[in-house]
Image (cartoon, rainbow, N blue to C red; front, side, top):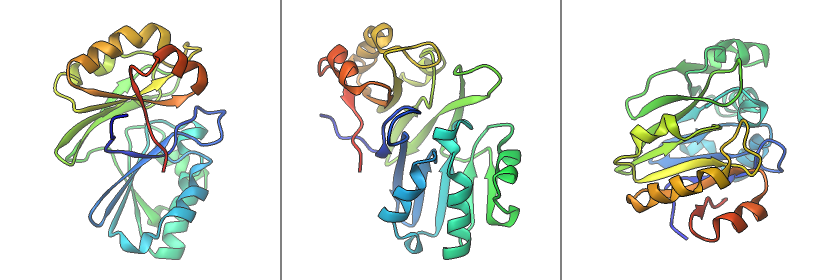
Length: 220
């Protein structure tokens, strides 16, 4: 099992017990990737946010299993820790979403740009803009799909990537069907990019299909 730079709070798809979400600590900076409806209670139990100067939340899209407790987390940081959350997102309705779910404007900022991150538009569901991204962490180039139905948008970014975190599904349709994508994922790994599977809709069956040829993300 390869060691991943990102640590995960959950690796399930939308109907699982723990929404897919990851974090990374860089000194006094805390980076959270997606904040679905199961994520807030894990954050509250696992972290002392007094120790961080900056708290960033990357939001890939606005489905509930990716942004469902974002406003609650913002409120928690604002009222208990007196910290403003920095939301990093390209979602066109992110500010409306935060307003409708009760996050006060003074408690957060929304940035679509950040020196170390580049958002990658991808195909997931109709009528919703969805993104993956590439980010530079610990001198490693990381590519992260978020929810995606295809690998194509990410291939140009994988030529020199160190780690690739990808959606994996047995059903396909609006997610990446592992059975179809496996040959290409194995080729990506042969080109010296570590591949990690996440957002699993049926982990047992996906492991049977993969047969230890690819790694799965590990939870905290």
